[in-house]
Length: 218
Figure (tube, one colour):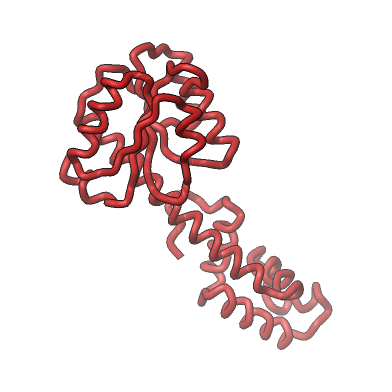
């Protein structure tokens, strides 16, 4: 698994937030030993001020740190719309704290001391998840832009198409000719860059954020 970590993404950064300098130093050594970039912070506020969601990565976070706690940092990240995968590592874990961390989106809640291999496995999982999240956001942005390129009438026709109506039924709804609807459909398919109605439906669901898991491939 260590070799796998090295192949994930050389541009990924692992962020470590822990107020113990010895732990920060040891985690830096461990993570850099598998070829990943590391940024360490003593305070959650320092990390929050410097973090940019543009590059892939994950966050290794202690819960009990001075000032803003690890759980409070999770909440701040969520408020700002940042979905960086978080691995909670703490020597003072309890069930309510773990539940709160997991509900806030943590990958897992690990109690110190943590096996190096276990932590590296979770880091790998976190980076892979962040890469997938960023790819999905980029794809969704492109799909939204395609849909926004449609005219008002084309959007209207598309809504009827994805709801299952035939061209004749749509023509009756809009009181236009069958050929007019077919012309709109052709333009919609071209602008949305799909070749079938099922793909168009799937794309529309993805734009709405309701596509079932495993149906992201278009």
